[in-house]
Image (cartoon, rainbow, N blue to C red; front, top):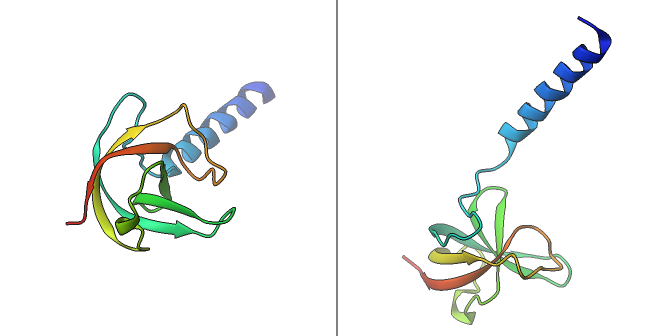
Length: 103
């Protein structure tokens, strides 16, 4: 095995390990899944309300209603990913809430 192919094998193995370690994110472009999540307040850039469907995965809602802005509140929300927006918090994709309820 040459040094070049050994280096390539190490890079490929490392990249694969990193990809498997990433949190699961059910939200893909052009979909609007219903997700179970916890509402979280992150004290970043003046504060950001997020939806956290699983540990390490955050969505930044454009339109989280005031009555749902309680840190730790469990919710079920129908979301639409909005790649045409961005946020200063930059902890996850921006979403539009199509419907939301607290079970």
